[in-house]
Length: 118
Length: 111
Image (cartoon, rainbow over all chains, first blue to last red; front, side, top):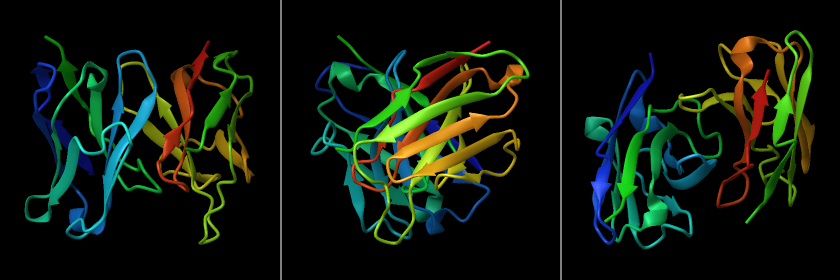
């Protein structure tokens, strides 16, 4: 069974940093591109970032997070990461990891809530 | 960025009756490889999104055959042939052809 389990969310002050993790199981992790998608409270879905398969040579970011977020992967640990710096109130959202990029979303995690507030 | 426009944004439905959601993109979603990367997602209340349809009309594993997707170019449709109670939720279209990927605003389906 494919599973994605996010962790690392929490309350952080504006300007602070947070690192989210997503541990994958049930599939050959290094063969899949992976993505982060977020959902602000009561709002729709917003694509955040994607990384290519097998080592993640290629990375892609939404303009809203470019220069502040860094996506990476550790294929030895079946783990997707995103380092989030210079956080803003508008980054408050549930962050989901998902498989794929063009064909995003065959599998999703349960999400982890990030709240940016003083 | 490609703008994805869904209609309606709210869809009252009757159990056992059909329902249809439209999604229009601001530019063609045909990619250079010939594929059209238009996906549909369902998000039930309090749950993570779930992909229903990929590349316009391909149903994901486990998705009931009452769900179908169609369309081409810039106009796409998700249809539910006979609505069931478990279909309540918000439905999103998403394009994966042009960076950055973009989602529609969502259509809330309620009985």
